[in-house]
Amino acid sequence: MDLTGKKVKIKAKGKIFEGIVMPSVTGSLVLKLDNGYNVGFFDYEILEIEEIEKIESKTSLTKNPELPDVKIISTGGTIASKVDYKTGAVTSQFTAEEIVGDVPELAEICNVDAELLYNILSENMNVKHWIELARNVYSALKKYEGVIITHGTDTMAYTASALAFMISTPKPIVLVGAQRSSDRPSSDAAMNLICSALTATSDLGEVVVVMHATTSDDYCYIHRGVKVRKCHTSRRDAFKSINFIPLGKIDYMKRKIEWFVQDRFKRGERELELKDKMEEKVVLIKFYPGLKPDILEYYYGKGYKGFVLEGTGLGHVSTEWIDVIKKISEDCLIIMTSQCIWGRVCDRVYDTGRYLLKAGVIEGEDMLPEVALVKLMWLLGNYDLEEAKKYVKENLVGEITQSTKYWESMLSFFNSKNK
Image 1 (cartoon, rainbow, N blue to C red):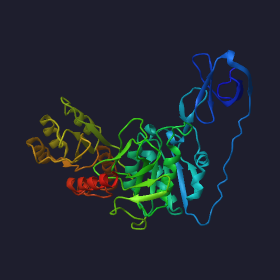
Image 2 (tube, rainbow, N blue to C red):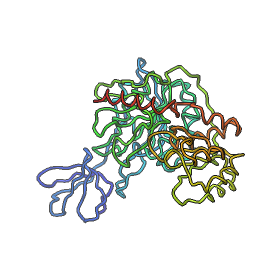
Image 3 (cartoon, one colour):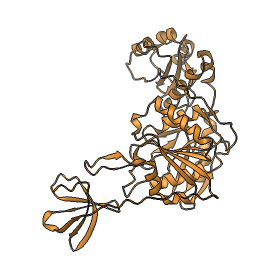
Image 4 (cartoon, rainbow, N blue to C red):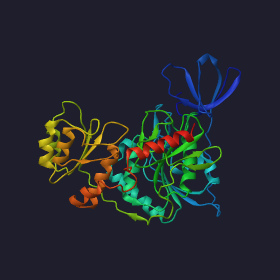
């Protein structure tokens, strides 16, 4: 009898074990215990086996009138995932209510309303999802003190940028994810969610990403949504603030926020406003040695009006590209960013850079390429070309720092605080 996916009680090795039967390629019976660990049994070790009914517990979300109300919007991802016991794969299966029910500590921080908007992995996110999510968040901000969005980590920074540009918010909008699924003993989901709730009820007034700061369960960082990147495929501290420092950190045990950046958007500073038009015909092109400028002409011929070039070093592409750039820059917006993680673009140092500027390229300063991509989509969706060319050079939501020296001095201060 195939018991895969069923909860069973087994008598073996002189003990009683309860858990869910996992897929097995060895022929032995593999049981996932309630603590998240797996244990295997050979047939001769099993004295008794009994299928038992799994009792699902449901958490009653009783409101505390003394606590703030927070909306949790679930879009899927690892934080909303668990093992599919039929296949052994990790899939998005939790509803938003189940996420909240798994972390009862949330009830000590805020009253939670939960909604399942999507149940997708983040690589399936697209511009239409961003727009629908922005509208949903905008509506929630009229009623709730803060909004938490559970999201897959792989493209969370893109979504954070999109929301940062589309929504002028007087309250916290917090994106949170997990590197390990919620039913794994090493999961970071619960701590990240608790820290995101503390952030959502703070005096913040902007879009941020909250994730583990270290591989230990000690504290989370609050990253500005337009200054963060996922820098590791699987580590729990994968998210880093780039060309900036985290806005603050949350001590998990003390449930306390320490702010590093005082010059941040604070609660109530801005009026709630939604500008949710996005131009999808914008492309991010990573230059590599030998790449021909034909790729620009291809996208231009397809009607693309926005180009983000991920150039080398200070922001360079081959001189072969200059004539094509000059030809299309009249009715296109072309931003130069860098493949380097740290630092800013400066096309005034070498001849190639100066020729690119004359051809119509606009320096992306210290914006991450993916942030520049989203910014162009938003600008070209809401403004005409000349206005967009003007605004792309302005720091709108913290995506551009005033100088490299400025954030480097902040980084030194930040490091000294964390020794």
